[in-house]
Length: 157
Image (cartoon, rainbow, N blue to C red; front, side, top):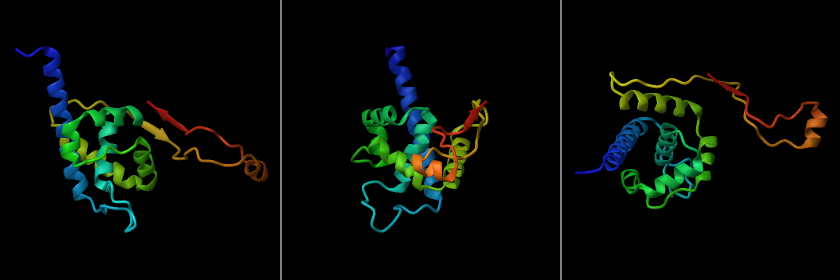
């Protein structure tokens, strides 16, 4: 007999694979080009990176620990076709490049495809101004008269 811990690991692994397969099918249906430009390094496709971003959101993890976990998940690497695990900053930079429309649509479609009608979906509401914390010099702030805020304005309910 298998222990309960091993059964739980198998169930969570298959749940992860099912989510990734659902995300891959949704991402391939979008009109996202495989590479952002013709001069890309072509190490990872935008499809692979978008699936990783969706999977990170699904697992609700920070970038560093998420990429460490993906490094340990050989089946996830095989399903995604990753020969090399991306650095966590690769995902962060990808999120800065991609349009938010792709993220919203693909995550919504993936969640709808992944969860059946009987599953309970935990709901979290986010409200944000959309302004990100970018770099601005102290002298620019003085010259324009605008005070620099070092945080992202958001609220969660």
